[in-house]
Amino acid sequence: MARLLLFITESPFQHESIDHALKIAEAALKKGNQVDIFLMMDGVYNPLNTQNGEPFKIESVSERLTRLSEAGVNITSCRVCMELRGVSDDNITKVDVGGLFDLSEMISEADTVITFTGA
Amino acid sequence: MGDKIILIIIKSTPYTTLNSYESLRTAVGLWDHNVKLLWSGDAIYCLLKEADQTQTSHFIRDLPDLDIEAYVHLNSLIQRGLSPENIIENIEILNNQDVTKILEEADVSLVF
Image (cartoon, rainbow over all chains, first blue to last red; front, top):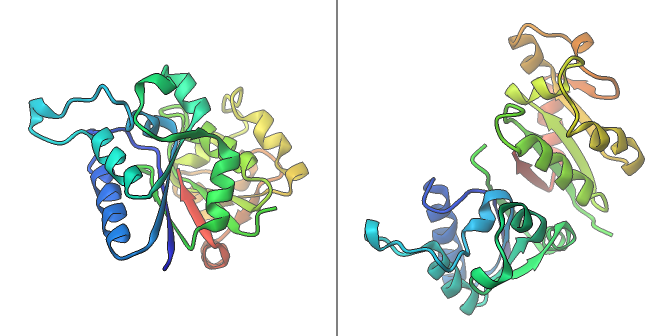
């Protein structure tokens, strides 16, 4: 079993990279791997529980993150990035809120790190 | 203490996004690993002596104290009509072979 870290700085619905990241997470889980996700910069918008994909007939990213979390994925959102963007603990789905210290630990434990930064 | 060699590659043009600032904040935050920074592509404009470095200078100043190695891709400078003399001090110049080497050595690459 490998441990995979997905480093995401992209916002929901803007780029398909979020969809790719979540599909990779789902596939890695299905194969029995451990998956961690660190959300930074605009990536912290992904767990917003006020999202509604209905107008575009798509599932909200936060619902997919909730499902991943319930399946055992460790998801951590950068507190500084959240505060900068006015995202509070109250309006996000079930993710941990942390910082670069947590990212450092997640990198230490990861066998593979994939970045979704749009760069 | 982290044990990974982390290469942070900055490709984004400065000022258009927060990538330049956030890449440096991340580098400093991961200091307990072996962190290396590489400016490449349009990101090299961040290093120009004449560029506004209000947001980034304090991070760049602290890099040596945190043993964070800072590099710039020579070809990216040349392609933009620039030379090593145009950029701030304490940034090591890497040719293509050198860049390949640090890419090979890295355990993790974070791209901004």
